[in-house]
Structures are given as C-alpha cells and as structure tokens.
Length: 163
Ligand code: PNS
Image 1 (spheres, helix red, strand yellow):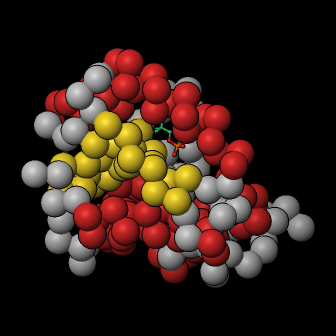
Image 2 (spheres, protein in one colour; image 1 turned 30 degrees about the vertical axis):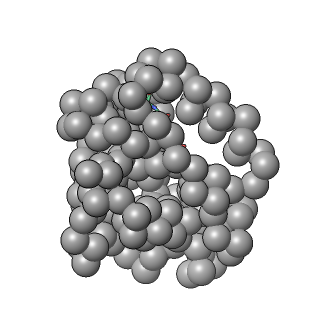
C-alpha cells in the first residue's frame, strides 16, 4: 500500500497546497496531511483552526485524512506507518531547502522516501506568507486560497488591517 504524509505548516492552506493534495491523493492509497505544531513559530491560525480548515477542504477526498504532529516529520511518518513524504516544489528557490530537508529525512529514516510534486504553473509563486501579506493590506486573495480560507483570513485581519 502506498501510504504517504504531506507535512507542512498550512498557515494558511493555499490553492498550491490543495493542488498538491488533490494530485497526491490520485496516486497514493492513503494520504495523511500532517499539520506541524511548531513551537518556534507564532501562526496566524491555531493548530485546531488549521486542522479544521483542512478537514473541511478535503472532506470529499475519501483517501485523505488530517492530523497534527510535533517533533520530527520522519517520527510522525513512522508512528502511523507511512513510508512516503510528499512535498510540492515551486520555483527553483524552493530547491535548496527542500533538497536539504529530503536528504536529512532520508539520513534519519532510510526507509522513508520523499516524493516531490512540481507545482501547477498558476501556483508557482504562491505561498502562505504572500497570501498573509496581501490579506493584511486588504488586497484580493480570491484566486490564491479556497473561499473558507479567504473568509477566515479576512476575519482574522479585520481589526489589524493596515491601510
Ligand atoms: O509548510 P512548511 O513550513 O514549508 O513545512 C515545513 C515542514 C513542517 C515540513 C518542516 O519544517 C518539518 O519537517 N518540520 C519538522 C521537524 C523536522 O522533521 N526537521 C527535520 C527535517 S529538516
């Protein structure tokens, strides 16, 4: 059985993440989206909010589940019996970081393979950070995130918006 995890911060989930989830779900039997509880970052959305959003967004994909994890990605994969890590690759700027992470994970857990999925062209320069910055300044993010994320982000930034 091809059992994969797709780990990330998902703060928030973008159309780029959804593109990778949908495409990965087509060629693995089971896909667990792993939401990192990162103690070193202060996310805009709480872990619970991010998990709930992803659950809503993937509710009609039968082989996708959403879980949280903390600690090492490979330990999370091992703990649930997954042997694949899915990561999306955007522009060449992603490459160094992603390659380093893949090799580090392989060094830590030789039995777990990383599989890169090249982003779709319309998501090439799309990131959670860019989305948050645009939303903070009141810009339009309609083509960058699912509707529930747009509404949640606009609600978060309602009182903080800089004009
Ligand atoms: O969405 P992101 O922030 O690019 O995801 C990064 C993530 C969560 C995949 C990465 O930070 C990670 O794997 N963190 C867990 C700690 C870990 O396993 N580190 C070793 C690999 S470098």
